[in-house]
Image (cartoon, rainbow, N blue to C red; front, side):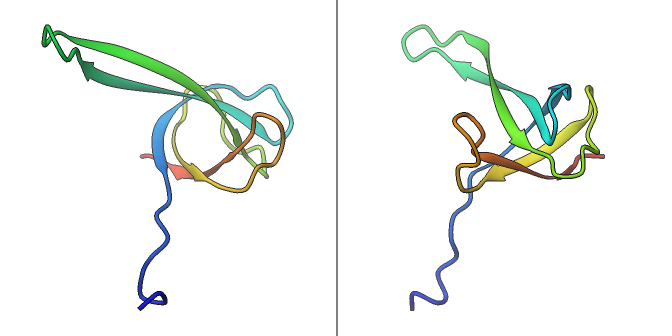
Length: 84
């Protein structure tokens, strides 16, 4: 049964805000959250450093990225594709 169980990968979608580092892009993910008590909806954002082996993604691109092994102190994500 363990062979049939798929490994759950964490995947996110966001916008590249920086591509100045070599083989690394910074991706901003914006989430809409509802306050537990008051019910007001608000936006929360977080930046992730993602591995981009070929330096093909530029600032402004919408990308999908997933968790991977740690590649450096901050980089634990890899870009899997571009959202069209």
